[in-house]
Image (cartoon, rainbow, N blue to C red; front, side, top):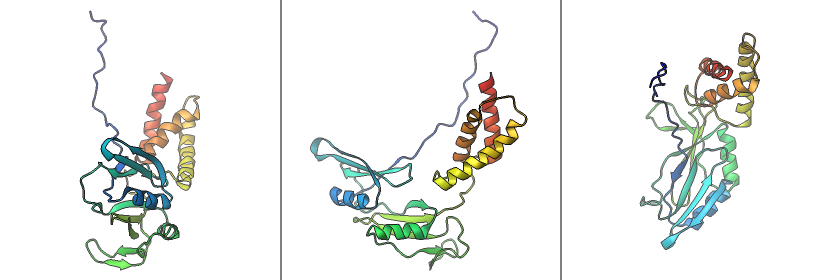
Length: 220
């Protein structure tokens, strides 16, 4: 029996699919464990299973993606993982830190043009995504340091202290514009959707609209 009101029709939404693990093919699990531990990466787990199975997980500082290696995880040839990116906000400081951990790191380089040969030294204009350096683990799996200070649209924000501070100040400013015309509310109800939207790569204008829509739902 109908009460006269139609049931809401579900609409397809965007489901988060977060890349959280990369599997590295290695030949000596303990050697790799020492190498990544010496980098200062966080050891999350070291599991053993049946028939010699083993899985080790490390997470680079500040990363939301981890690496797995071990025995029975992959049939890929050890050392075949190439060109994995580690994004840093200061490539020279990151390179110095790795060298301090005993890692052999290439000199910083850049490309004068896409597809051209590498040019020694950081990008002359220090543009984001342009200054690079490489290093390898004991099996030859290669990592690429990439300096990023301003992200491309839609790529979200890094959650280091400096970026978080800047985001909080931006949120405070945008909330002031909203607060001047909105009914009384708790600031956190507006801050949360705004900051999540910005971290997901939406522009400040889009994030402000998202937060305003969220507040309409909160007030109902």
